[in-house]
Length: 317
Image 1 (cartoon, helix red, strand yellow):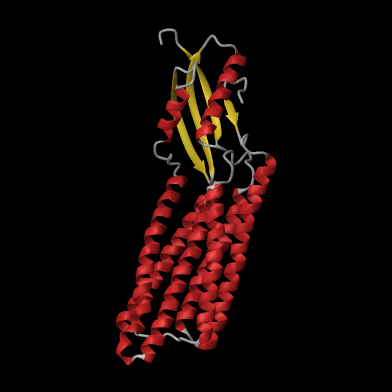
Image 2 (image 1 turned 30 degrees about the vertical axis):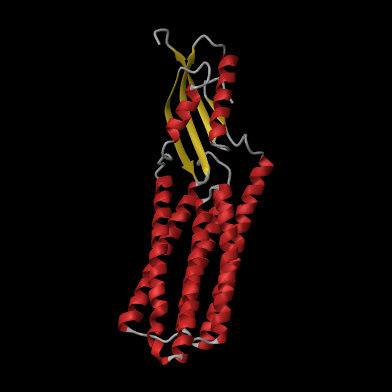
């Protein structure tokens, strides 16, 4: 919407206040249920691990403990990021989500480092026997089922609301799925090795598989970390300025589109553009043209916050 100063700003016009409130509530609910799931999984693993004396399950309980911290961090980050803009945070509080995602990525890398250390220790220096009890299978299979459910819910919410915090939380639960499957694989290998003495080497299968999972998680975590850092340092998405420039300059009455600035604040995309138009237009005509520009840009990037600065076209141009 154009204003007398020549600046035109649109904020959340593509989304009603009710829609925005519902979206924030959905994100908070997804984060809160993840915290609850992490508490249940961690408690279950600790109880069974202590009861059976299984080092593998206790190690998984420690891994799930990291996920609990990450889920708790995500919950508070989503709550803070959902607060409206104020005088001290003109662009809102969305960066809290990016910061939370960065911390969660670091937690994932620390977890992977610990998994690699333990795997190497078991392969070379400290071979250990995995306890293949019935309860061990029960707790790990239950963990996989819960993790798959939470990971899917978080992934859908992360994509729907472009939330890096929820995406990082989903990645945490995804790593739990793979690490739990590795433990299950180790349990199965122990059963085979116990039944068939010629397959004694299978006692080390879980450690080898854990190394593979850790490498995959590191690659995914680094990619998410790079995107998070780019958002924190206000790096514009690649190619977005060219797309906006071509779309705006294709409008009738616009001679040039320049000084295009784009930044993310959490899931929110802020776009500033300067345009050259006929200086003889009335204020009402310039206002109408800036609104056309805003609608054009939001057609490319829905729900974005657009600011248009109109400039008079000089006679010699």
